[in-house]
Length: 489
Image 1 (tube, rainbow, N blue to C red):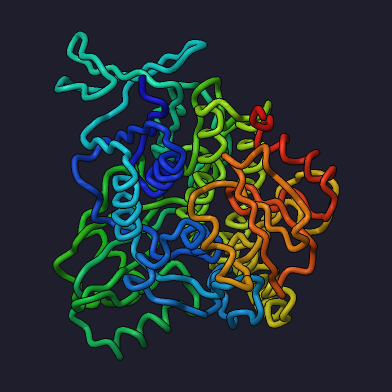
Image 2: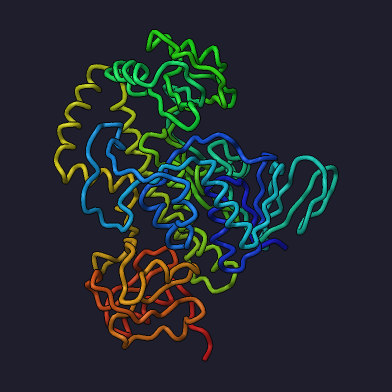
């Protein structure tokens, strides 16, 4: 039997696959597309996602293929400076296309032994006390862990995770509610060549953006541009891309010119629908990424939110599969991540209102721009957008408890280099503590850091602080909560 089937081979599913494989979990990733998508709907990684990659030793693969930006404007496009002194070793946004992110995460998952199967569309599922059976469309060889029956392929696994996007088949088959607001406005997005010269193009775009912030162009390589323009109403079926003629017409409506666009690579549309799944888990089936939450792309948070879902879920699901998970550990995935998604939905709602061209919204936007000139306000919003302000409710204790710990310089090396295996970590500056009974799950690092002003910290595999102190009994009271019972002997 397969340990975990992941439906969806996007960034969330591929990140999750890699996390599970670090713990030896047998993973099969199913994606309905026969080839990876060429569309780069997301163009960047925020600070927390960059930290996640660094914790797993992946960042060096990404940096040469991206570009670092220390520019503001991530909250509703309101132009502000990048705040100084953020609590991170990676104070920048990494500009990198989603297609590149997916490719690198797929390479990593495959290297670790994940089985990625393309052209496999999940159309049915059922579960019992022992596992989940999924049904795939079409015939063909079922591969390891499956059987062919009645023209359909069936696979059996202990768990299933739906990472299959906002129109998630897994979520619909589970009957999980997806309440929220439908799309009110729609935006066209695409990549295409532009005949107009760069200076004239920039001048026209700047003029339009004085009153319409959902309009813009971004230069890519080889004379190609990413172009965004408001649509004329909301399409009944957003899975149908706009025509190139529709795109050109909308450009002329707003700018008086279509910029001589030609040779489109791809075209798509997106709306401002905002929805959050009622539950992230039903028995042996879980949801992550856009399958659990959808929202407008303002602030560039969607892809990042999914990667961070996977980072939270991976070690917990692996612990369940491997048999050492304490009671309630897997359920803490929903407890911790659903409020984070709810907060993202709220801040994107607020940003969407600030993008309106209505007089009242424009007045509020001007006021918001004045407020963001205050360093405290600017920092607060950037920490929210980049997810470094996230704090899980792990109970009373030191102010660090529940927060992720930034990368620290140690006497020998740095903290994140010690976290590449996806295990827990006891960073012990006293040299008097012990996690011997959990040595198969927790690394005990006796080290000193001038950047850490607590005697010792217990970190979960996702880098969030579970305990701070110098007392062995206090430590023993927290290790079982996150890492199960001590090993015999």
